[in-house]
Length: 174
Image 1 (cartoon, rainbow, N blue to C red):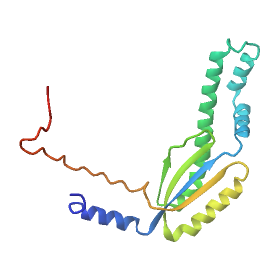
Image 2: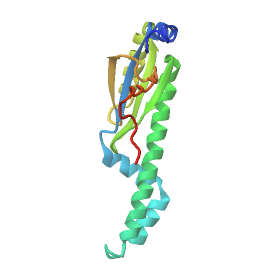
Image 3: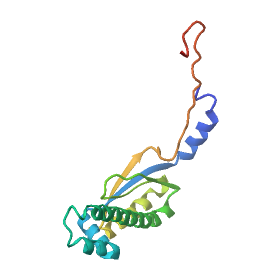
Image 4: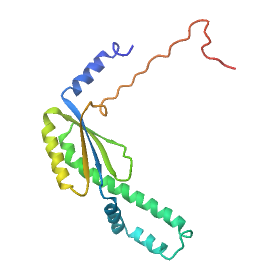
Protein backbone atom coordinates (compact mmCIF):
# COMPACT_ATOMS: atom_id res chain seq x y z
CA UNK A 1 0.00 0.00 0.00
CA UNK A 2 2.84 2.42 0.68
CA UNK A 3 5.99 1.38 -1.14
CA UNK A 4 4.75 0.21 -4.49
CA UNK A 5 2.64 3.22 -5.56
CA UNK A 6 5.34 5.66 -4.42
CA UNK A 7 8.39 3.70 -5.55
CA UNK A 8 9.71 6.50 -7.82
CA UNK A 9 9.32 9.11 -5.05
CA UNK A 10 11.23 6.98 -2.53
CA UNK A 11 13.92 6.16 -5.08
CA UNK A 12 14.36 9.88 -5.87
CA UNK A 13 14.57 10.81 -2.16
CA UNK A 14 17.09 8.06 -1.44
CA UNK A 15 19.24 9.21 -4.35
CA UNK A 16 19.03 12.81 -3.10
CA UNK A 17 20.36 11.93 0.39
CA UNK A 18 22.79 9.23 -0.76
CA UNK A 19 25.91 11.41 -0.69
CA UNK A 20 24.81 13.56 2.25
CA UNK A 21 24.62 13.35 6.02
CA UNK A 22 22.97 15.22 8.84
CA UNK A 23 25.05 16.95 11.47
CA UNK A 24 23.44 18.67 14.44
CA UNK A 25 24.93 21.38 16.56
CA UNK A 26 23.53 22.39 19.92
CA UNK A 27 24.92 25.63 21.28
CA UNK A 28 24.56 26.80 24.85
CA UNK A 29 25.85 29.52 27.12
CA UNK A 30 27.94 28.02 29.94
CA UNK A 31 27.70 31.17 32.11
CA UNK A 32 24.15 32.51 32.30
CA UNK A 33 25.13 35.08 34.94
CA UNK A 34 27.39 36.78 32.37
CA UNK A 35 24.60 36.75 29.78
CA UNK A 36 22.13 38.31 32.22
CA UNK A 37 24.71 40.97 33.09
CA UNK A 38 25.16 41.77 29.39
CA UNK A 39 21.41 42.11 29.00
CA UNK A 40 21.17 44.31 32.10
CA UNK A 41 24.02 46.56 30.96
CA UNK A 42 22.68 46.92 27.41
CA UNK A 43 19.02 47.63 28.22
CA UNK A 44 18.29 51.12 29.55
CA UNK A 45 14.61 50.25 30.07
CA UNK A 46 15.62 47.41 32.39
CA UNK A 47 17.80 49.79 34.39
CA UNK A 48 14.84 52.18 34.66
CA UNK A 49 12.58 49.38 35.86
CA UNK A 50 15.12 48.33 38.50
CA UNK A 51 15.43 51.91 39.72
CA UNK A 52 11.64 52.30 39.92
CA UNK A 53 11.33 49.09 41.99
CA UNK A 54 14.25 49.92 44.31
CA UNK A 55 12.22 51.62 47.02
CA UNK A 56 9.07 49.48 46.80
CA UNK A 57 8.04 46.66 49.09
CA UNK A 58 8.11 43.23 47.44
CA UNK A 59 4.31 42.92 47.32
CA UNK A 60 3.99 46.42 45.84
CA UNK A 61 6.56 45.60 43.15
CA UNK A 62 4.92 42.29 42.20
CA UNK A 63 3.60 43.42 38.79
CA UNK A 64 6.76 45.40 38.12
CA UNK A 65 8.75 42.18 38.65
CA UNK A 66 6.51 40.35 36.19
CA UNK A 67 7.04 43.10 33.60
CA UNK A 68 10.80 43.01 34.21
CA UNK A 69 10.80 39.22 33.78
CA UNK A 70 8.97 39.53 30.47
CA UNK A 71 11.46 42.14 29.31
CA UNK A 72 14.42 39.93 30.28
CA UNK A 73 12.79 37.01 28.46
CA UNK A 74 12.35 39.12 25.31
CA UNK A 75 15.91 40.46 25.47
CA UNK A 76 17.27 36.95 26.04
CA UNK A 77 15.35 35.77 22.95
CA UNK A 78 16.81 38.62 20.89
CA UNK A 79 20.34 37.78 22.09
CA UNK A 80 19.74 34.10 21.29
CA UNK A 81 18.51 34.99 17.78
CA UNK A 82 21.52 37.24 17.14
CA UNK A 83 24.00 34.57 18.25
CA UNK A 84 22.22 31.89 16.21
CA UNK A 85 22.39 34.17 13.16
CA UNK A 86 26.17 34.46 13.60
CA UNK A 87 26.51 30.67 13.72
CA UNK A 88 24.39 30.27 10.60
CA UNK A 89 26.31 32.94 8.69
CA UNK A 90 29.51 30.97 9.23
CA UNK A 91 28.16 27.51 8.49
CA UNK A 92 25.47 28.02 5.85
CA UNK A 93 27.90 28.38 2.92
CA UNK A 94 29.14 24.83 3.63
CA UNK A 95 25.79 23.05 3.69
CA UNK A 96 23.06 21.91 1.33
CA UNK A 97 20.25 22.84 3.74
CA UNK A 98 19.75 23.67 7.39
CA UNK A 99 16.91 23.50 9.92
CA UNK A 100 16.43 25.46 13.10
CA UNK A 101 14.95 23.19 15.77
CA UNK A 102 13.19 24.29 18.95
CA UNK A 103 15.31 25.01 21.97
CA UNK A 104 14.46 24.20 25.56
CA UNK A 105 16.01 25.86 28.59
CA UNK A 106 17.30 29.37 29.03
CA UNK A 107 20.97 28.49 28.48
CA UNK A 108 20.39 26.80 25.11
CA UNK A 109 21.20 29.22 22.31
CA UNK A 110 20.44 27.10 19.30
CA UNK A 111 19.76 23.60 18.03
CA UNK A 112 20.66 23.46 14.35
CA UNK A 113 20.55 20.57 11.90
CA UNK A 114 22.68 20.71 8.76
CA UNK A 115 22.53 18.55 5.68
CA UNK A 116 26.03 18.40 4.24
CA UNK A 117 27.63 16.64 1.34
CA UNK A 118 29.82 13.86 2.67
CA UNK A 119 32.72 15.19 0.57
CA UNK A 120 32.59 18.50 2.53
CA UNK A 121 32.52 16.87 5.97
CA UNK A 122 36.16 17.67 6.81
CA UNK A 123 35.78 21.33 5.83
CA UNK A 124 32.62 21.56 7.95
CA UNK A 125 34.38 19.95 10.94
CA UNK A 126 37.26 22.41 10.61
CA UNK A 127 34.91 25.40 10.54
CA UNK A 128 33.03 24.17 13.61
CA UNK A 129 36.37 23.68 15.40
CA UNK A 130 37.39 27.26 14.54
CA UNK A 131 34.04 28.52 15.78
CA UNK A 132 34.35 26.62 19.07
CA UNK A 133 37.83 28.02 19.57
CA UNK A 134 36.60 31.58 18.93
CA UNK A 135 33.65 31.10 21.27
CA UNK A 136 35.60 29.53 24.14
CA UNK A 137 34.12 30.71 27.42
CA UNK A 138 31.21 32.36 25.66
CA UNK A 139 29.40 29.44 24.11
CA UNK A 140 29.83 25.67 23.96
CA UNK A 141 28.98 23.72 20.84
CA UNK A 142 27.86 20.10 21.03
CA UNK A 143 28.50 18.40 17.73
CA UNK A 144 26.38 15.38 16.78
CA UNK A 145 27.18 13.41 13.65
CA UNK A 146 26.26 10.06 12.16
CA UNK A 147 22.51 10.58 12.23
CA UNK A 148 20.26 9.78 9.29
CA UNK A 149 18.88 12.93 7.61
CA UNK A 150 15.60 12.88 9.55
CA UNK A 151 15.27 16.67 9.57
CA UNK A 152 15.42 16.87 5.79
CA UNK A 153 13.11 14.19 4.44
CA UNK A 154 9.46 14.14 5.36
CA UNK A 155 7.23 11.45 4.02
CA UNK A 156 3.54 11.70 4.73
CA UNK A 157 1.64 8.45 4.46
CA UNK A 158 -2.14 8.36 4.20
CA UNK A 159 -3.59 4.91 4.48
CA UNK A 160 -7.19 4.41 3.50
CA UNK A 161 -9.32 3.56 6.48
CA UNK A 162 -10.38 -0.06 6.52
CA UNK A 163 -14.01 -0.32 5.52
CA UNK A 164 -16.29 -2.16 7.98
CA UNK A 165 -17.42 -5.54 6.71
CA UNK A 166 -21.08 -6.17 6.00
CA UNK A 167 -22.96 -7.02 9.13
CA UNK A 168 -20.37 -5.38 11.43
CA UNK A 169 -21.23 -2.47 13.66
CA UNK A 170 -19.00 0.14 11.90
CA UNK A 171 -20.03 3.64 13.01
CA UNK A 172 -22.59 3.68 15.74
CA UNK A 173 -24.93 6.64 16.04
CA UNK A 174 -27.46 7.30 18.73
